[in-house]
Structures are given as C-alpha cells and as structure tokens.
Image 1 (cartoon, rainbow, N blue to C red):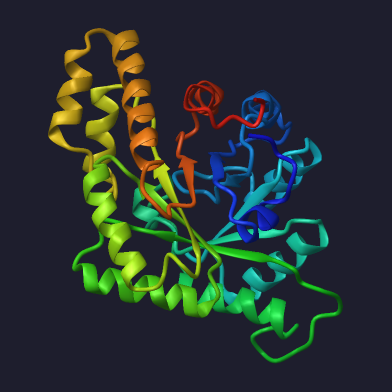
Image 2 (cartoon, helix red, strand yellow):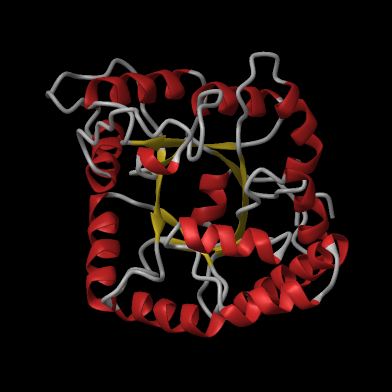
Length: 305
C-alpha cells in the first residue's frame, strides 16, 4: 500500500484505511518524534497523535505539526477532559491554520487514570458536542457563539467507538448520534475477540452507521501476559480474554511472549480483514511505535511496500 492520497481522499474513495498512533513524550527537543518517524512512515493513511491519554506530554497540536513536517499525515486528537469550549475552539483554529486537516474527537480517560490524578477535569462539552462543533466550524464557518471564522476550516472529523459498550442498543444509539453530529470515521478500541467484534459490526451495518462513516478496527500488539493483565485491570475497554493471557504466559520467557503477542496481533488483523465492509485497521501500539513496520509488513499493509 502506498501513501499517495490524503486521508480524506482515502475515506471518500473507499480505500482500505491503515492508521496507527504516536504517543508524544514529555520533551522539548523532539527526540522521541525523530526516533519514531521511520517507523511511522510505514503507515499508509495517517497517524493519530495522542492528547495526554496517560501522562503529561508534548501537546497533540505541536507533535502533529512536527510529524507533518516529516511527511507524515497526522490525526490531531482533542480530548474534552482538559479544556473548556474557548480553549478547544482556539486550538482547532490554530491547528487548521498550521495545515492540520483531521481531528479525532474524544472525551479522554478520567484524570484518575493518568499520572495527574489530582488535577481537575473540565468536560465543558462532551465528545459528541465536539464533533458537532467541528462540523459547524467547517460547514457554517461559525464558532459556538455564532461569531464568524475568517477563512476556510476544512477539517475532517472522527470519533472513537467502543465495541464492548453494553447494551448493544445503547451502543448503536451513541454511534448514530456521533454520525448525525458529523463523524466521518470511527476508530475502535482494541479488538481481541474477532467473533464478538463481527457481531457488533453487523449491528453497526444494520443501524446504517457503517454505511455513513468509515469504521476502522483497532488492534493492540501485546508484549506479555503481565502487560495484558495490567491493561484489562486498569482500562475497561481492554477486554482481553483469559485464554489469550494464558497463551502469552505459556509462550515462555519475555522474548517468546513478545513474539507470541505479535503473532496474535497478526492473526487478529487477518481475521478482521475478512469482515465485509470494514474500512480499515488501526494499530494501537501504546508508545511502542517501533513494532508498527513489522506488523504492517507481515500483514501486507505497509506504506513502504
């Protein structure tokens, strides 16, 4: 796969979308970004730039601009946990003026799941309202207070989807609300049970959501049984089956477990790619960007091929 069209063009022409994530670090010299650039160049569609999901780090906006300068199309993340509507609109205007063309609208993990548990959250608007805000800025050229924007605001808008949210009916209602608000693509939480995910995706198709927005399935390469147990104990969306944890543990030492984790990730990708109508794969590397080229290469999805 080659990166010869923008992410927006790929969405509109029905291409199979391949995205990954980059987790900025707490730095000012850009060392982590430079170290990750070669790995991220293997991603043929676009790269999510996380917005302080676990700890304080360089802003998603700054890191997105730095990646764009390296020829990597960023997906700028905005979480509503940390900013009120004034700050969010200001950042969005700044992002657009700096050439950022895609935003992923998120609520964000509660601050108690970060390294700054004592901080206050904001949640002035939620993720659905944020999607709607971006759409209004793009289509009407106005801010929330009705003031006009001087210049175009051609921002593509995405949102997150959680296949594990129950009941399924409520899940579909929330997805439909995000589409109605203006979401053009969804990136899902990490998939570990492809049969369950297929049922969720069938429901999304039946609800008309999959036909209106591109759904990109998340996958997470696990390094060890210990990592798997930590993730599922800490974050409710990491629904990692007991059998998968035991498979990792039974693989042997640390190197063997890491190899087994890569094998599981590839098996998951190949199974997901067989689901009719699924629009793409999203690599949730959790800061392990160096694993991305190997996984995409083995799956035949690398932008370097």
